[in-house]
Image 1: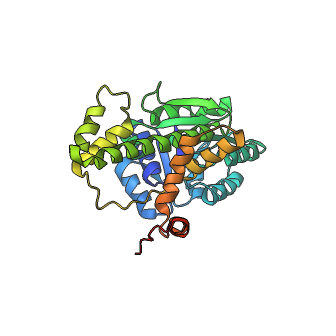
Image 2: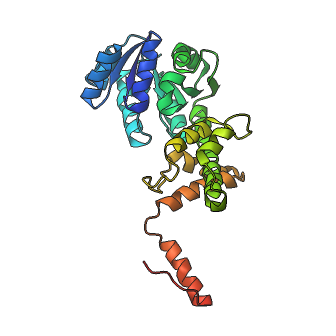
Length: 302
């Protein structure tokens, strides 16, 4: 079996490596020619000089898997691909696209007889060795075509992946997954902050997080990663208190508003990330001025 992988960054590159380990032929393209050359030499990926070249090195049904940033890069690539493809070919979006965009793109390609699958992909840099959790949305016939590839990427052929529903449902499921992830991370961070703040106990956070990993109801992979990080440094003086937010976290909160479903934990977790990004702190300055105005409380100067 052979497919083309377009976008060979951290995720795309490691997915190529995992597919090659399973004996699946991969034609790879990235804007960085050195990345293409490196993967070709390392794992036997078939190098492509362009997307057109990659498509030309496939035989029907041709499968093109995109691992590109959401928004304009993915939108543009899907539009550029369509004229190169034929009825029965399949485009897969494995990035973090908005599920509504995936529904629209899937319908547009379907009108031309081209299949589409949105693959919510989780696993990060650990996916190469551990496998990727794949939440896929597609028509049944497209999902069936893609099954050997999905099984090769998943942690095991029978676990860690699911055809969750029609086009759009894969990215929708991944979106909610990331919203939950925000809440879990925020809860761990707040709890450990409280433990560190109890100075009279002089608690060892590395010891405590390692303890919780065994038998505790809060054990998780996130806790595993946290415990490992704290073994080396508990003060984190060299880490800036800035936390980026992905589009999926925002989209999850927007979905809760559209559905009228209360999601306070997920919403507050996102808002805390916004707070960490506020270098100006203008709102907090205003709060200080208000306290001074009505209560005479001192305003702390820089």
